[in-house]
Image (tube, rainbow, N blue to C red; front, side, top):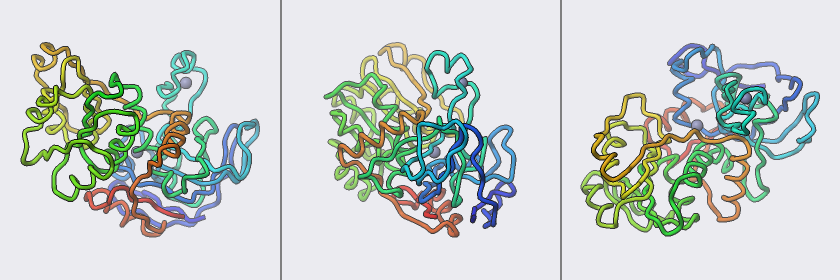
Length: 334
Ligand SMILES: [Zn+2]
Ligand SMILES: [Zn+2]
């Protein structure tokens, strides 16, 4: 099979011919049709993730069909349209699993970090990492839903916001353009925090009720005029911009951080205490969360905006993502 491989940290991806992997007990093999390029791929590409071993095939937004199943797998059959996201499955032995909290399984299996990912024609995955793609959704559209999609959908549906509340989505990019659509379909009053006229027009088209230009407008003043946001979902990985969002929250408002800037954030304790505000992180979700994300997207006609690249052009797709040129998700097709 063909695979695009990180051989050395920060080096270009190299095209390799590899043996098609065999699924072990409890695993499935997926013929990959599409794989999204996520900002978190930087962790593999630059060799940043602690304990990461190279060479490694990146890619954790994988959509395809099951083409072989290992011993003991009864839930899935060959031919099933499935997806695999960041969450690489769960062990069923740890304390988190005992409490049913599979996304926080202590085994910490991560697709494309613990094992090879989807910048390839085939991938092997634990069956507990496998989500179902509805028939209405193409493989290329499903791919970004398996990370950017489940991350924003899950963070929003578990947030304290209720229908009619003001929810702001910071950043209209790979995550944010899906966040706006999910937030609108969930019945929130949606504010998009972005800059530039083209993104403002697009955010409105995607369902934003209000667009605040972060370059020319005072975000705090704009959201406080509306009573303050119940929830702000931070999707753009910029620590300084995220730090400035706390005062734009309303009473008991929550800043939900799903973007992962590498620099620390800085907030004033007084901005938190006086209005009983809080800051929370949210880690995408497990395979069942991804299944529910895609089912919700099918129900409401929610789709990512994507640019596709053939597998051999994975370096171009990655550069597109890194330089913020992708509108809005680069997807590799194999
Ligand atoms: Zn991702
Ligand atoms: Zn576990």
